[in-house]
Length: 268
Image 1 (cartoon, helix red, strand yellow):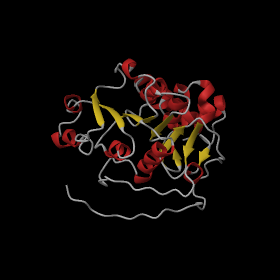
Image 2: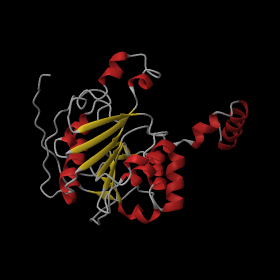
Image 3: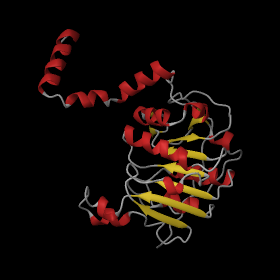
Image 4: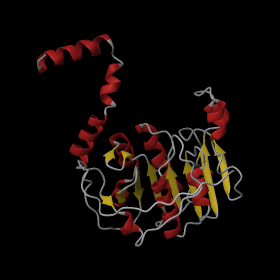
């Protein structure tokens, strides 16, 4: 089948099934092309190495369950290290899951707040009570963590504006949802030193999730976009109002650093 035939076939399919147009418009390749043409982001955000953020980088991650849907340990180490680096006194998290990330951050930040769907809301799309009960399991008993419940797309953030040194976004990863969470996150920042971290900027540390990048870029005030970075070896993007040496992401090249991992099991 040649390209013309394929084109006619595609048009026929769209005419018969208009909903397929949404799949085209949501394609990662479409987001990549738009970002490349409009903003020159063919390589994604500038790549920032952990070692340029934290010379002599070393961190301990605990608790960590090594179960499905978990954030990578190095991503949690990034959060914990940036909290310490910025001397963060307050932390706001959108999307909690088991509570591993906030539990780690809470060990170095005195006041932490998380926003997650309520158990009732979770059970509207999952009929597994174990899945619902696993939410917040690591953080629910921590004295310095306040748990808020609601959908971030409809939540009233007004009482929480301008109060947080570090914000972590790990909620709904659809483009429009990330964009709105990003806009709200900038309203949560306390001052000009405050930082935002986004999870799932990449499908993995070498594969950009272009729909999420589009949402981050569009949701970030234009004058602040120069301080957006991808953090190497993680699945995270970061807004930090400082200038660092960077390079472009080049998948599969020999890494500049490797990491030492020690594991120890702890019983509940």
